[in-house]
Image 1: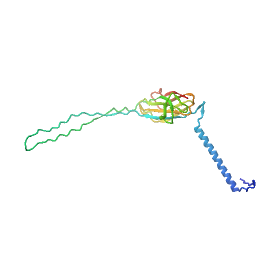
Image 2: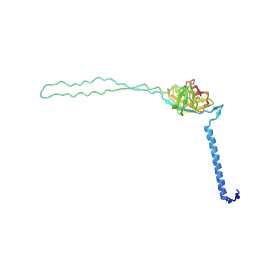
Image 3: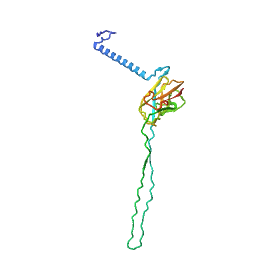
Length: 244
């Protein structure tokens, strides 16, 4: 690389060392500008929803509360015992001595423990069933903020509350579900195994939903059939939400 010097309006000539420093700073600034552009492109791709068939790509979030299967109960039933008679003996009237008899100590009552029959060991097949129980919206990103409503006010996120229960006689193992909204499916995998009779309540809410429209939200458990069930006819539930 050849460095040159020149005069402008009577200024002093620029030395080769100074020119090299200026060129180095320019190169560093260019690299920083390119890096900022790449970061901005990645950020925009992550947080700006794309358009699919005219509908903003919706992100679906999920919250849940697990209700375990009822445990066997334990009861204690007291057994009544006969009252203890305390003998005092017969009093004497002799002037010399008086005989006293120590009272007998009452026996300690016993309380046998009666246990309920143990639940049967898991057998057969599980049966995952889903049912949407309410539609509405959330006022924050938490299931605690769910508000039941037939319509969703502008600026809020449409949501559904639904229950998943294992109606079968065996554990489910790891399972999954899919929440479907117009233009997108959101899958949730590796959900916690459920015992027979266990039930979980979920709230799913949608971001970037199109306004002034009716949105259909469908929930499907075991969407890929990875869990062998005794009944698959109850694996899907859907509901409409009016977005204002």
